[in-house]
Image (tube, rainbow, N blue to C red):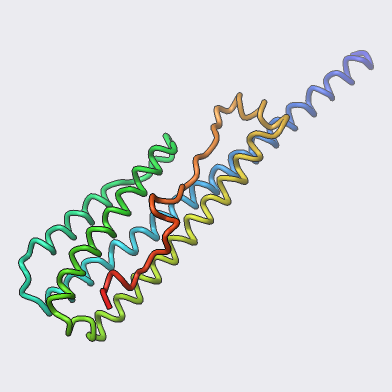
Length: 198
């Protein structure tokens, strides 16, 4: 083999190694984003798991018609049935997921506020206060998980779009990751305590 052919073969080998390195980095970053989606879903699930406890505690204090509790259970079922499909992750999918989660909290707030107004002793219950703190803690966990997801998605997107990474990404069929967006009315500070109507 001639010297020129050997140099060409070495350069081709280096080019392939370079492409493999970029591809592997894309895979690693994509997996990191997928893990972050799992963390977001786990945080929402933790909050959803607290809702039956809150409803059961409220039920102990009230003989309020079961419509309020039925509304809460149905909203929880809808929210927990909605998942994020990483194989087809789109902004619309994230928006739908977020909408179901927001509807759950809205339904819970509306129905529990009615109960608390009719049964003020409920607000003084130690169990109810502990559950209020637990829900507030879940809200913080959700916010942190969403922020972490968006940071990881940003890191992936920036790496994906940089030249020459974008060339390798095109061969690997990688696509830009969407972000969690703020919900409508997010500019208004959420008041978790209003859930329990002081």
